[in-house]
Length: 316
Image (cartoon, rainbow, N blue to C red):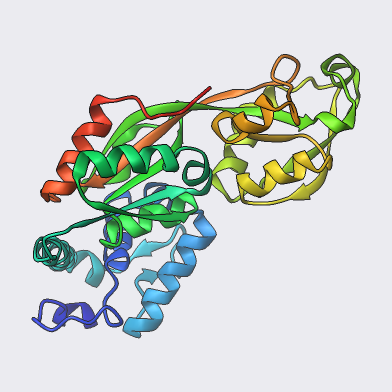
């Protein structure tokens, strides 16, 4: 397998992707594609596509597909130590290169889209003062944020997390901590001239939905749907994977959307949106910060300590 030569000094990003190595290690550690996909913050179809990409690159199958359930081939299991060593070498190299940056450091902060819009402006100001450095903000979905972290393209990641989600599922190379909280609330346009009382009495609700394979879609299905009155039928009017788009749909009067309270606070304050959490279920969610455990850089360290010691600036 091509993994055998990955320890050579000249490693090109196009030849080896760190997330590929972590994907394989996750499968070895968990023993299944399903559990590994959860650990890697990917849907199972997306994770399967990544595994197929690895197989195409190395020109060999990683799994014995004649066995049910799928099992890793013995040659992959035998390469575990070498794969782990190469992955750690790439991480160490990335950290060393970061330390060699010019005197004015840049901290790369990756956030979920809603956090970037609602929280990051205040947060970046505080952090830039704290770290005496420039802040580069990257906005992505939850899975992409985690990928940016483990590939060394982000120093600190902020994502939403379900209250029941364990912090230790992020992998052995990642340090994580809850640094704030938010709430997923149902909102509707004030111009819809629909009172909360009338909403409660309706048998059909026009709703903006999130796709089932994204974090908020899964959260809605598992945590919010069971608490909706069984007499009320949800009619999906539009679908989007972005909370910012769902907010705009709600403001346009298309239907009810569940969005983070921090994202909706301005529209609620100026009365262009109505909070329906008195008559429809809302859900408290955490904001989780993550960084690589071996990242001992001065800037990352000072920002990390600030995040652990302070409540994120989220106005209710």
